Every structure is written in structure tokens, then in C-alpha cells.
Image 1 (cartoon, rainbow, N blue to C red):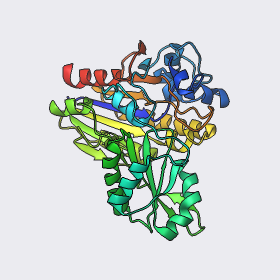
Image 2: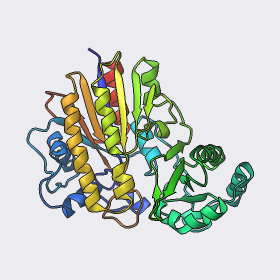
Image 3: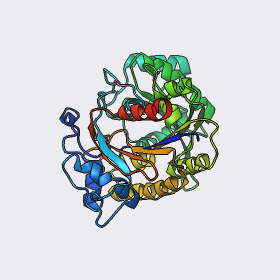
Image 4: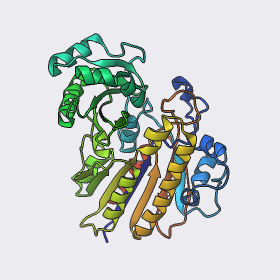
Length: 385
């Protein structure tokens, strides 16, 4: 019987500020707790049954409406981030066993955010001047510069509190393949500045004259600093599958198959389809669910975040039904993005660790000092067992 491990990363679903959160301005942040405090009643039946509340009790607090249960269906614990930073790339790389010594570089938020030499090189290699050149929300900056972009053809380049160089363009002004090519050029330029990600942010103008970002976003991550969990699995003949942003985050490295499905619904649809297929060899399915972070965390939408997790919760139940006795489901996160916290940035938090196998009574895993315990767990189950 072939073994499968499915990792579900609920993007930004943190469970409490890390001991060093004060260094990041995140003291007191707690994504899961503050959502539960704002939304009354029982919530998240599957996650509660797996032991989400039990995991949080390891940090000394109770999740209202998602309290500890007597007989959790999964092993439960929490993990601290060891790498400096609180961004998507850092979090996912650590989950896969890569711990960074130094954080990725971040640009200042005020205009001009980008070094003059970087902008000069961008213009030299692409033939394009830029608009923006500051930190901003993606929806806000395309409204601010969308009309000028349409008239001039200049791309809108902006950053955020993360280590990112983002390029927004109307698909009718800069065709999508041209935008991707510009991002690939920018990726090479940004390597010298230790920038975590270059991101293509295409948008359109609707008949109602509204600016709407499309689903053809693409992330270009900096090269991995060493072999990750995916490389080690692939070397041992394990089938490695990425769903959602995973391929972008790891530059497709170590992946046999990569499905760039957009949004949680599409990602769950892909996982359900994969689980209904009979694997030819042991398999890892690694999934990022971005909606919690992108649509609700950064926009500080508490109700939307809660509802998004509720939908995830129901989908996790369906995944459990599709799993065989040799399969393992791991539910975790990559950082926090507390919708009740100040600003719009990620928050430096512990993340949950729930490890489910059918007919396996849950036990307390305690508190790990690194997200990389996920890598250790996967390698143990698919290579060393």
C-alpha cells in the first residue's frame, strides 16, 4: 500500500505572538484568538475535533467557540518560527526544512521605495519607466495609477511590508506574457538586493470602469539556499505535487507536478481529484490556501477571515473522508496576519500543527522551536518509516 502525506497550509493562520514579536511590532498579535473573540458561537467543527483548541492551550489560552476537546482526532501542537522574518517565502521554506540566517531585504515604505540603481537597471533592461515606487495595497495603487498606466504604458511597481517587488499591469496594456517576461528580468535584478519575491499583478478594467485584479498572478521567488524537503523526497523516488502557490514559492524545485490553481476552492478541487487517483508510488501533496491571507488578513476583514476558515474546515472534512489508512493529513500555517491588529502587515506568530491519520487517537505534540518539524515529520513518514 502506497503512503500519502497531504500538507495543507492555511496561509497566515497564526495562533499567537512569538517571544520575539516585539522586534517586529507584533506584540499581542493572535490571528486565531482575535477572530474567535469577535465571532460568537461554536465554530470550525473539523479543526476543533482535530485539536486546534488543544494546540492553543499549549500556549496558555482558550479559543472561544473552538475549545479543547477530550478526544482529538489528530496529534496537536504549535510551532515557533526560527528564521527571521514573517513572509510567505520564509514561512514555507522553513516548513520544508530551510532555516534562514538573515531575513530577506525589505524596501522602505515611503516614496521612493526602490534604490535608484535598481530602477535604472529595470528601465535599461525592459525599456520601461515605472509608476508607483512606494508601499501600497494592490487594489489601492492600481486605482491611483491605473489611468496614467493606461495612457503611458508604464508598469505600476510597488512594495509592501514584505520583501517584494510587485509589478501591476492592465492586461490590455501589457499582455500577460510580456508582464511575465518583465518579472523574470526583475527577478534577476532583485537577486542582488536579496528580495524574496517578484510578483506579477495583472488586472483588467470592467465595463463598469472598475479595476479588478485577475487570477493570472505569478510569484517569482529567490533561489533556494539549499536542498529542501521536496528535493530529498524526489531523490528517494517519492512523487511530489504542489498545488496553488507552492510551485512559485519553491521555483518548481523538487516538484514532479505543479498545479497553479487560483483560490481555495480550486485548490481543494485539485486535492480531491488527486486523492481519488491511485498513486503509483509514495506521494506528497503540498497545498497553499492563500485566500485567508490575501483577501481577508491584509484587508483586516475579521468576518471574511472567519468565513474563509469555516469553508476550509468543511473542505478538510471531505479530504479526511477520501484518505486511506496509510495517509496522513498535516494542517498548519506559514505566519500570522491578525485581522484585528494594527496596519495591514503579516504578524509574527506561532502556527498550529495538526497531524491526522484515520483511527489514530490524537496526542499532544507540545511546542516545537521551528516550523521545520513539518519537514522532519514528512521525511520520517515517506522515507524513514
